[in-house]
Length: 97
Image (cartoon, rainbow, N blue to C red; front, side, top):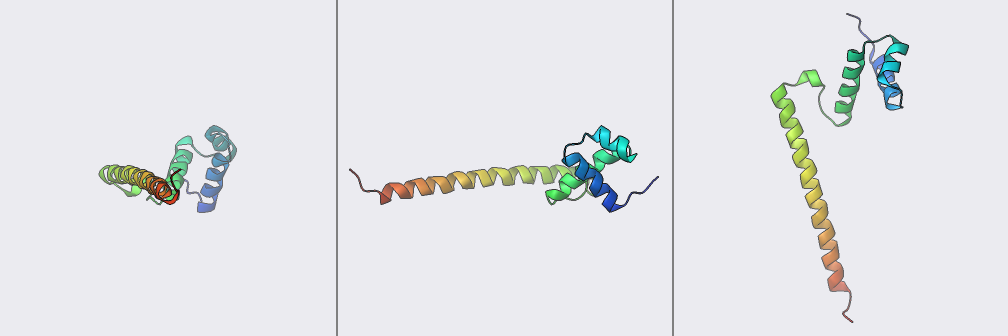
């Protein structure tokens, strides 16, 4: 099994994120499609502050996804409440005609 440096992996992921297809990057760098896909997935997870896919069990991964979904929902609800409060405060500020 061949080990690639972190810098090599980051460069490969960067190429994919800049618009090159995974097939092209695999061909140009001589890496397998499965390896590159895992690197991209791990980089995406790291960007979101999550551990690499192999570092957690399926149950933990499902729990993380559920917590992230719940967090997104709560942020949306908070935004709605913030906008409603701003709207309602404007009603009390403006004088009636």
